[in-house]
Image 1 (cartoon, rainbow, N blue to C red):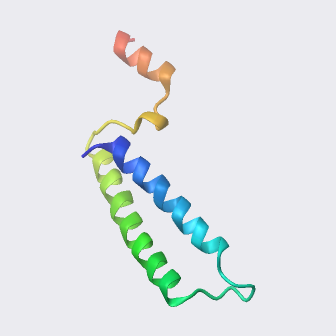
Image 2: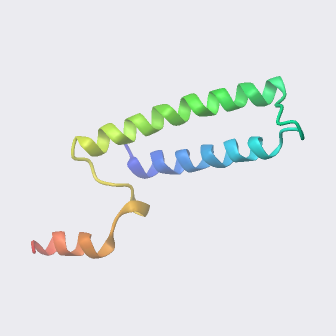
Length: 79
């Protein structure tokens, strides 16, 4: 698994969900297409979160945007 690609896709899905959320009518009602898209996005996001969690729990490295550069440098030096 590529944790960087996983996180990037998660972030794209979050943006898509927020965009749909911002487009509901004044009563907070979604069209059928919007509701279907939200359900699809939620299902995919759950898959990605689960996969990334399993990856990290099993000792996989964090996605690049989540890494602490100072900690990584210390670990590489063996300190």
